[in-house]
Amino acid sequence: MYLRFVKQIPNLFTLGNLSCGVIAIHQIFNGSYENAFFLVILAAILDFFDGFMARLLRADGEMGKQLDSMADLVTFGVAPSFMLYSLSDTISSPLRWSFILLAIFSAYRLAKFNIDTRQTSSFIGVPTPITGLTCMAWGVIDLPIKDAFFENQWLYLLLCLIVSLLLVSEFPMPSLKFKKGQSSPLAQFVVIGLLAFAALLFYGWLCLPIFYASYVLSSILINFATKR
Image (cartoon, rainbow, N blue to C red):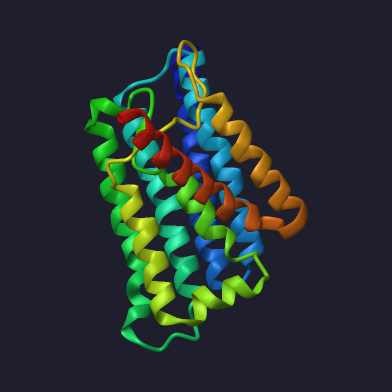
């Protein structure tokens, strides 16, 4: 009985992730964007530790893998989609429905990730959590650049398309989770981390979109450089 309970501890972290995502959606519809944003940050922390606990307790298995993907879809796919929709309330054209692309492509990416043997130590395409966090961050950013994206229907469409398509792209991306026995491009993360920290000091939560853009662009450039 004790061992069975211990084996379920990672799943409790995953269910905590899912709970945060569901409550975040509720907060978005209540207009409490800041609460929703911090709930998704908490979910990201829980998402990190469910894998860590599974490896520590040797409790990783197929059920935990599938449960993790379903939780991630709600928290980092559906909740951020509703954030994009809520922020675009000044757009009256059908293009406002572009927000649904993020949920659709998140679901496709997570299903693909579960069966793609190439993604055991690194990623192919941008991970769902960093994409979801970046989209959620727009809810707490108060800068003119935000108005440009969420009041212009074409820029809004472009934003939804880019973040959605990058989820299922074939670009190799370094893993954001450090695992024993796996090397990580430390120099790349140091540079990106410094940029994000500087952005946090000067521009607040705009640091997350800057981190996202730096992570994607640096990974693409490194990929092209290593192939030449």
